[in-house]
Length: 118
Image (tube, rainbow, N blue to C red; front, side, top):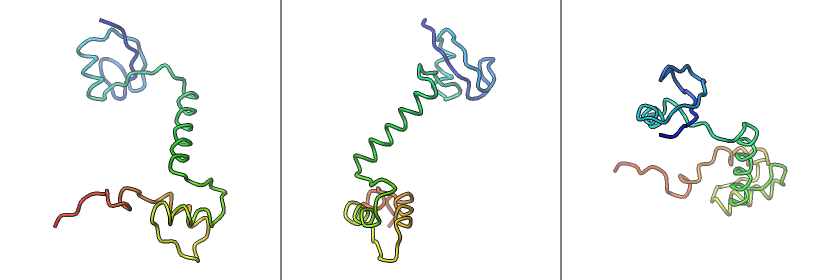
């Protein structure tokens, strides 16, 4: 069998939480991976992981057309009203609109949320 580097999420296989070891990949190790008791350690450093996540967030924001947080109130109002069909009132500030976006559920707003029982 091959070797795999794992990190214990809970005490298992003689490991304590947070222990990272390289072990022979056995049926017991595969079962621990499958049940989430250990995770397979990646080759990325923490900095690389954080950079990848930040880039994923930037790409998602660009794909959705989310304005920068320092964009004008009008830009935020147009984004929410036109692209996400959110009702915007004249008395809402830019910060209010950003807060609406931060707490906005796109799936529910577009009717793709949980179905209600009749």
